[in-house]
Image (tube, rainbow, N blue to C red; front, side, top):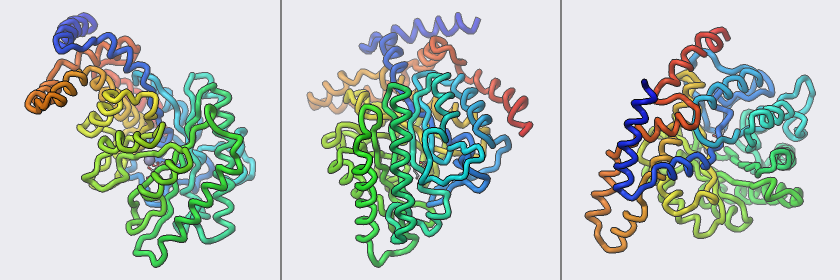
Length: 422
Ligand code: RNT
Ligand code: ZN
């Protein structure tokens, strides 16, 4: 019955879109090829698996205490599988180094190897989920003073440089095993709460540290590994100065041939990442996105299908950047069911992708070139009311995942059977 209704709605929608010059079948095929890297850290509030003492620091914070958090690698993988069974589209799995499973081995982050990620590699293989990777420069005693790669403490800085090298070796192992690039994202929280007296030294130290990591592991690179550097404006307790600022990371990426990571929560509130894409793409072959939802600050709320998320995917698709802009999500909400948080955020990103493929960008651009800004605005606004819902439902059906909010009952059941017993 439901399927018949969806079919009916879909036939109608197909005609409406065709009249706008859009091929709905093709849009669904294209959307299905667009990969999103799903962050493992939504499942356990960014605590990680190294020890009970893990967790966030360096200006990021998970708030909320909804029951059912994954407390082990097995629980996290179980929850992740449940989430992805409810999400359409192509997926990768994004891991942090703090998700190493040491199984009693006594070692620190400067000594990690691919063996410490053997369970994740097996999971990746079995579920056809290629891995991406992140060195973890937070949640560790050696960054307690707020500095990692730019630390003036020689011992700490050396430790973090070694960590970066180990992560490139691990990323290479991932890339080779999966026959597809592993994207390694470097985000360092380094910075000061209050006005610094010397802004230059930490930036020089960070530049030299990054250079040493890449130089001493230079045999590692594409296609196994793609390196990215993530900029940031501020964090809690790091309000006045961030070493890896926008200009610092842009300059680093351009001069060293790295990807630049643009996180949607890492800029002033009126700046938009959607507007930055075509600007940085003039100078960079590839970039990485961290799609999040900043509410008043870099709060990392669950991704919403909001205007900015739509604009970002419109930019990627209208400009044909699909192979050059890699997409990862970055949020962590502990105030709601964490599996639902994954499903809601990723499905929202997928809606924005499908909707961007259902937009007649050529028509909008023609109006613009002709100076017909009236039509440009009229069409942009009217597109919002086209019958997207039935196409989304059909897309979910084709992808073998629940339509509408049927997934919610499944998550509630999972909460009852599994999460509530933790
Ligand atoms: C922090 C950065 C960073 C982290 C993750 C956990 O502000 O956005 O990407 O959120 O690496
Ligand atoms: Zn980020």
